[in-house]
Amino acid sequence: MLHRDPKTYALNDFGRLAVAQGASSFGDALLMVSLAGSIFFSQDIYKSRSQVLLYLLLTMAPFAVVAPIIGPALDRSKAGRRTLMAIGLFGRALTCYLMAGRLDTLFLYPLAFVALVLAKGHTVAKASLVPAVVKSDEALVDANSRLAFIGVVTSTAGGVLGAGIIALVGSPWSLRFGAIMFLVGGILALRIPKAKVSTAPETQEEVGELHAPSIIFAGSAMTIMRGSVGFLAFFLAFHLRSSNEAEWFFGAVLAASALGGLVGVILAPIARRRAREEVILSSTLIAGSFMALIAARYPERFSTLLLVLVIALSAQCGRIAFDSLLQRDGPEHLRGRAFARFETRFQVAWVVGALIPVALLDLLTEREGYFALGLGLAFAAATYIGSLRTHGAWAGRGERGERAVANDGPSEDTAPSLYDDQESRDDYEDDSRPEPRTST
Image (cartoon, rainbow, N blue to C red):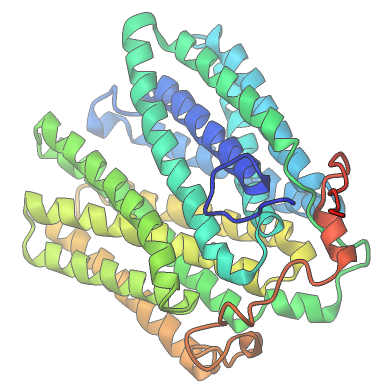
């Protein structure tokens, strides 16, 4: 009997997805560390703005491919989501291998662009595959949290190992090791079960579900959160350099960000046992706003570190809640294009948020930057909660609210299963698996 409980990392269906995600995050960290020195920290801060703008454009450009092409393609093929994940991993293995010998040539830039497109496609495919490896909506937050936790841990490990490899033998070998990690992940991705699809055209009801208040409002709130992350990252990068902060404080800021993300993935499933996704997302906005306003009132090193930690925690926890909400309320066979659409919106928001401190570098003080961040998050929290209450979706009474009971969501006994009948279960099974043995 197949075990689909995401509380184990054994190589069942969830285990294969988890290890493939870990290999992807590890390889991405090796790739980013290998290329990081060429972005913008190698020049004087006031001469590097054009490079920063080029970098931001490069990170946003892949979504011009992901949203209109990859998203719909995922929904048309039964094995399209796991196939795209495997192609993304194998493709990045090839690009890493090619970049290893071309770090000082112009070919590096198109290769980096291809790697970014494949990485974004992997993100969309991974989010779309999660419901295929869990049994109920109740397990979505737990599964998303564990995948995010694996991503944080493997990214950190990959970054540390990559830095060590670069110091010892150079960036090319870090890229070659990343290629090996991507190959391992690609092999495991091919063993992830197929996701259920429908060959029928999308109906007006399904289009309406993608525009349900719970999804639209959560997407808008998460967009502002992602913009806030981009704003804070680049605001601190430029502000700390212009203030000639000590190198150890840069390290402390990065450590606070990593710790916040780690705490976020641990806290999300705990919070889900006590509250619905909407409550979790709104709480993260309130927490980020409160901490930003505290930092504006007391702009010191300690408050800056606390702000970075809380924003990282809120962004990670909020993203897990949003993914689970979209997986819960969105039409099953339209998840690929839905995740592609929202990934595009979030990345654009991140870039716009990052552009603000780049453009206003000479105008924003530390206190003004934190205050603007706090006001933006407070506005997002107020409008999100107010919109949900107006449409009756705050307590689960919206268009999809009938799935939840009067308390904070469905109970374990009433949670709908992804395998309500044998036909739908067969859609998830890998054709290569043997039939289960029956006892006599």
